[in-house]
Image (cartoon, rainbow, N blue to C red; front, side):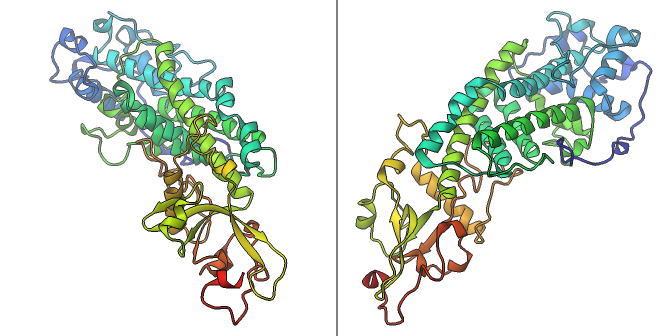
Length: 458
């Protein structure tokens, strides 16, 4: 399958008639104030500005009349110099050869109609956000933040395989949510965060989980960069099924019917910037926060790959729990990270036993000097919710269920969770436990005459 988007609806679906004649300016924005009033609109309230400037009506009307195919370039052709120019070098589709500048400040009234000036501002900001994200994913700083060698040294090698792409895009989605606290970019970042679900739904080549994690990450970054380019072509060129874009369900907030107009609705890309460098400054924290989140996910995957699991010992008291390094008492249950170890066969009891993770390892979770900054209770809660939703131990990140508020998506930490009294060998779902946890029928032999508490038999 192609490494572009999963959006495979035929290009023939875009059947709107394409016009080659100039747009009649007298009907472009009926009922709007004069040019000076339109051009005086500021972006203090982007949603209001999008409507008051006539940008919402103009864009929706133009797209419904003229179609979405190569719409940015054709709009420029049909409106520049009253539509007499006939050509355009505007290219807001490609990252490498793109030419999608902000309109020159102070010439709003020369646009035909002036509402287009505000549309062009939104187009340039959206394009530069996509391009900035694409470039940031290639930045060496991201590799420094991930510091994969340290993860391997501290926790062992993670084995993600195809899941690494979903993990990367979920991490970027969390990064977008964390950064969206900055008011002027909360709108566009919420859209980018939703778009990451699309990025994870690509048909990229399978990623081999047995290759070094650095190579797995490189493949995931490459796939995401390609997907970003594909999304850009979808947004600015109508190249695919635009109904898959975030925010395109139903009618838009101001009555928009075109999918692309709904994508731009509420002026979410009317940000107070006028150059690419300013946009890059907004995007960089998103990717850096995303890299830190991905680092946390890789810790969980590394532990899972080494046979660790979360054990909820229903026999432990709160006092017992509090005495275990790395444990958390959550909703009257003791959560720990443990590893099953086989022991010499004994006629008195179980052949294996569960051991709590070394404190030297688990203390790295929230040690500021280690740089992982994992909230241990959130780690346990996320893993537990994942297990409850996927009792077959097959839970993973849903690319279409990434929150926009910076919180973890379900199954971000999808390490197995085992619940039982005293030993995982008494878990109700013992037969479903992953094979790498070392549980087996032989390892969990319990004598028939063993009293109720297996600890008495060990």
